[in-house]
Image (cartoon, rainbow, N blue to C red; front, top):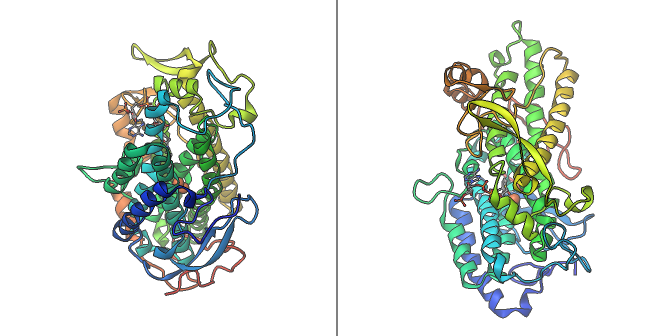
Length: 472
Ligand code: BYC
Ligand code: FE
Ligand code: FE
């Protein structure tokens, strides 16, 4: 079951050849996908050999194989984690009952909406990043970017499989729409905000992989708890791939930080910019921006949608099965800071309505863990008077109940004038962006790295940094 059939035109472990109608539908979608990839996928090194991993089994150990491949020849396929015997619904009104192998009529629209939103983010991110390799700080970084891109492409396949296999004609139409929307397009934008933002510099890319892909980790984790078993199995496998995306972001940012520290110590005024680096306060501003944008992706703090998903068993909390005892939550409440009559106060809400907030909390905690690692790296480089910090989850929000007010980095309610007066200190200014963009010059020579970022400490799959990750 776990091994993947690579003889089919679409590699899969779902026995696709036994369902002719589905196979034909997916084979019709495949050329459209490839056409999309060529048009708005990676535009640099498009037909070069890249050292990439490809999924060859869904076993946790040894699931991937590394080798040089041209991206358009990547074997995108449909891989679900193995079916668990007797799996039970993990949360909501029907917790403990058997999971669904088909879509129940009453939940069809809900499920379709979630799958479409999840699916939409995958191609969106590839579109956002399509020119980045043009200014890659090293060939290994370009390779990491492409690895993320091909896997986001595969995540699109994962969701399109669900749409085409379980949602009939509607599902096929949605699959076509997924290739028609475009990140940042005025008429046909991608669904969620963060996926319409430009990504033209690597500081943004690393922040995106660190913070926005991490929303992916938490959303997929909550969908892995789903009563709709095929979705749960799909998400469980996607999570294995996701770990690499997060490490690209985390380690990428750490390298920019280390380099800044090194340059500070070489400059008489401790000014990393004077020596062509990205100074620590500028990195902090990018973090503030992308943490905020990514927090928005969890939806409103108090949400009837979220309550409905949880009640239906469609979305659970992070590690719902493992970390919680009460999987029903009816009657339970939790406090959420809310602005009432111009004051910020704690208000109690039904816990089921706060499931977005529960997931956001788990996410923020994970981000804090990484922050501590970065701060250790900064100290390790000999800088003792700077610490990175994460802003309050109320800062710089454009979705949810904090979107209509202004908050400072600590989450205090402030007036517009105070906010405006501090903006340039808290978030990237036009000048910061111009500066960071000015550093984005390609380093496409094997074993070389741009001046503004430290070389990675480790290569990929045991290879050294100066390995031929991209054959130029
Ligand atoms: N931007 O009741 P609410 C990934 C809309 S990332 C724009 O709070 P709910 C990846 C919302 O749609 C993971 N609109 O909604 C990462 C709703 O609109 P309608 C992606 C937003 O449903 C990197 C209205 O506001 N997966 O995989 O409780 C690279 C009211 O909102 C936004 C998922 O998100 C926003 N940020 O929560 C590649 C999982 N936020 O319908 C890949 C599936 C909210 O009233 N999605 N709105 O017009 C969901 O579970 C939920 O739909 C959401 C929103 C968490 C997104
Ligand atoms: Fe993804
Ligand atoms: Fe990802």
